[in-house]
Length: 498
Image (cartoon, rainbow, N blue to C red; front, side, top):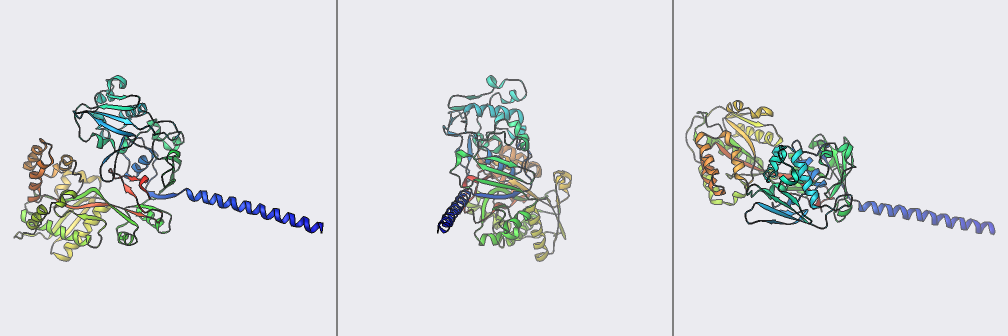
């Protein structure tokens, strides 16, 4: 009897012990479930985030996750406070006071101060490549400091007070705040150490929503900072995929949650499954006609442009997520001007006689987008006209002016920002006639955007610079994600994931 009782006691204790172990396991699983992880692939894990010169847009995404700026730009291009709670601009538009938030911290828990911002700008002026900090170089004394002719503390108009940072420019610059939203202006401490992330990632402190938890040749793991616990995503696993096809293959077996710009052939399927986010971006494609070639008179250029538009439209009808047709508009926003677009469409369809060539040549810079456009144009002309289109896609050779002169048509990619028409039109300067170049310079003398309307009509009516498409940024998402946005600079905003 005693033996039986003793065995029963042992059995009870054994069961209780096992139940406790199971409960601990279940508790661990529950805690793990709270740690939401997403993964996506890029073509190279960056080891250097000090300068933006050689960074891809996906590398910039990482910098944006790790750091914050005084201000940011939302998906709808609105300037929003970030580290700053408020921005006060003086009546002359030259001095800016950035009131700092009281609840901003580095990843080690220490408070971010106005002095940290001033010291960062000091480092940035010394280390970053000049072309990337043009806005900062417009600060009073900045150029002199960079060239060694002034001391930062008393020679550069960037001053830290107890609760704000005050910056004074040499002259008014309406784009100054917009420029400060770019990745290079996001706060990083000990900037030179960002040159070697592999050795220094665990010694750095981060101002952003995430910090680097581990890094290697094949992947980088970003971990949510403790002071940002409200974010849905705790860990971002960034993996090294040589190309988007490899990322997509991993996505199909649920090993990737985000794929940026998946292959053209996958877009319709993803859209039907509600797993595709299409976001308008500023990038656009334009067709330049070689007007110096006498074999292409105005009527010829008009008819060629009309046919090229038909070719692209036939493709877009089947692949409507890839890009949006320009329909005669140089900017996506101008497509709302239906009167202007209808008038241009009527003129483009105007028929006339000209000696049609048997062959047209087309040159473009080598990219996935241009490969698609060239292929579509070539096939449409083959099936619908007696003209053969022969195209060439090149890399560095595209900058060769003499090479471009040998082709009838050139595909030109440009940033179609309606907020910076001066830069937009200047990017076409090498393709303009002498009279058009003079008209462009005359338009620049007055900064009102409407002053470019005459120049725009001139290049369109002469059919030598013509709009084709506005591109979309397409993002494939897994079941873990219902929403994801890009910021106004085209960078992934991981804080928007839902």
